Image 1 (cartoon, rainbow, N blue to C red):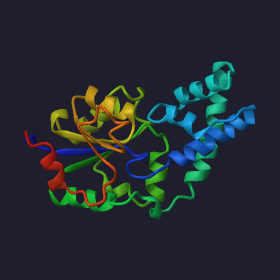
Image 2 (tube, rainbow, N blue to C red):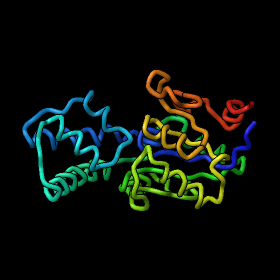
Image 3 (cartoon, one colour):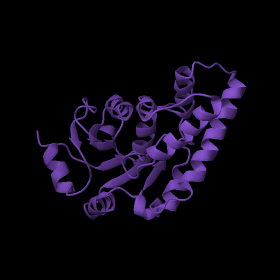
Image 4 (cartoon, rainbow, N blue to C red):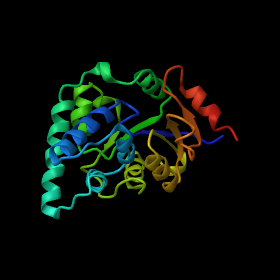
Length: 219
């Protein structure tokens, strides 16, 4: 059995479901540019950076812009996204999350948030969860997007825990690959069909606790 010393959580799709707000903002941008952007198209954007997401969206629309223009478009999308998330409430925390994190604290487990989002602080403030994490590493503190492991390695470093003692909770394929690249254990939030490389997959944190987590990693 591995000794679990830290749990590292992605934000979007793990703590809260902000994917719907990203989608609304990207769709709004696509519509303004003259083409449609479906929920199926949006699947390609999960777990990747803002600028890479914009590149994918523009490819779908068969449009080309200069780097300066792309920065303006990305900023416009982000302003709309911030407008949406600024209205979030604690009711939007996903089921079982708070109980599970409190259970980790009771077992003296270090807890970090590791998100590519540059708006993580805003979201955590809106849902009253900023104080639940010992360390918060977000898009303002990293330069590499997942599947690069930078965000997870920085989280472990600030916690003072070796990667091999960390378990990452992720809902995106790129995030699971980033955890693997960091040589950390991982639990996928979603389905086995999508998160094929996860060590284990759960549908949600409901009825999930630290004892269950430890049993997963009995070797």
